[in-house]
Length: 338
Image 1 (cartoon, rainbow, N blue to C red):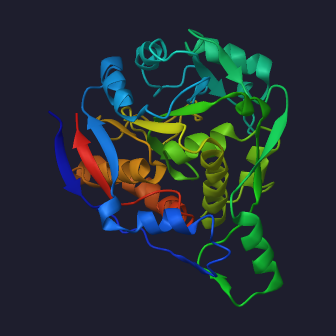
Image 2 (image 1 turned 60 degrees about the horizontal axis):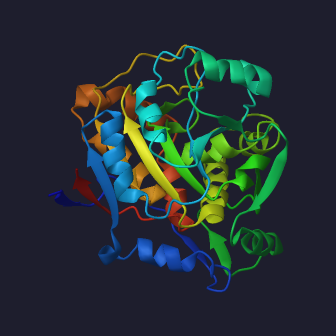
């Protein structure tokens, strides 16, 4: 029988959006639930770093998954040094009917900028064991971000009823056109550091990863590749567009293995800086990223130091703050050992 562990997050992510009730009709209910102690989200954890471990956790969170299922993962730069073992996802994908991998092209100079050479990289890294849909190969689609247009318009009008500690920047986000062909999305994430985001969890995987290479990623990064809160807020809002679109048909797995301070988008990423931890799964994107960060911060000082420096030097915890402000999930969670 699974052993349940009640815990609140070690980190206090603050930052509330104070606004008129009418403007937050789409955000308020989910935010209110996120702040109610009785409504803790479930996050499942296993130390079994194998595809069997993945299968056991996926079975706990797959109730909403049906129809055509996209598996969003980061296929990485050619021969990336810290990629997760292929057998993990290969074993899991084989057990998920009507599923395939989904990706998008990138904005930065890379073989992954164009679909043809991107496919070569996918094969080099071993992800061609099943079909891979490069979703922006045939263009872009715009996804609305629920509630944001009203907030942006009210901010522009100078309304005294809308004074937010967080910025709201986009009412829609450009994603790979083929994303609309999927009924459900499994977000399979290699949790690690990130040069701009501080850390890359489920949020970064869908926000940057589903944004189209030429349009969506430029919306998030900007022409000048901005850093800090502005970049992080744009990234969170892009992620909200994805979660809004799939609703209850999206679920999340974070694998805490090969934890480098660098993303798999860095072909020369630094070696892992701490021990492997395990696998987390949840239907709540904020809860799973919060739990992943908490597990890093709970490690011995010598193990966590590099990751903590990377996260805090990039203000990475603002990801969690802004997700909470937009009602994207629950920072309080119940960790359940499997």
